[in-house]
Length: 114
Length: 109
Image (cartoon, rainbow over all chains, first blue to last red; front, side, top):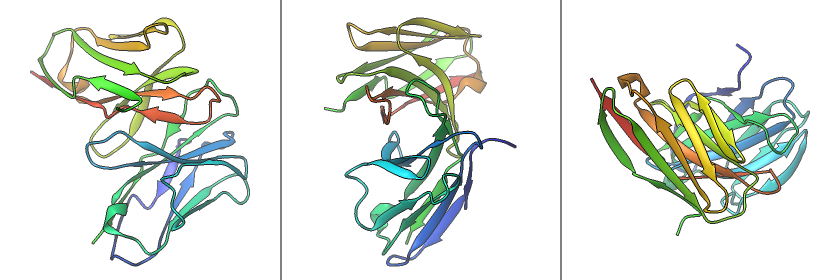
């Protein structure tokens, strides 16, 4: 399968714990995006990378959130000191380096903070 | 007011009916996307439009840039079309998508 993959698919954690999610984009794609989707809502943009450079971050990305893409391939999204409001589906997407192209989405990681 | 508004929020149809989902936006865009999301979260891109009309099988998408409005039509709807349909607009810089809240479509046999 050469699509976008995300791990884990589901994560249940207790409030205050740290969690890390991983996204593996399509191999030739150098743009990688993170989105968050809460129940019944459309996704919201969090951040995006072009190769290893993080070029834009949403104000939704508080200082408890950090994203990296150290070698320009896979990316990780870490949430520190999780809160119940962080419960959501975290979606990753990738695309080639061009403005008007499709983004290909991964299956998402569903986070539940208890 | 959201930058991207979809209507209706929920739509129930009988198999075979013609379906229209509407999307209005209030910001400048470089392109508009229609996406399909099935239970479990997976999102599939259906169309990307910057002008005019596109057709793929039973799906048709149109956009009117002057009116900042797009429609997604499904002809001869089928229960397997049941999903959430999401409109998203791409920023002029091309770096981010802004999504509507989605339209939950249920097609009954």
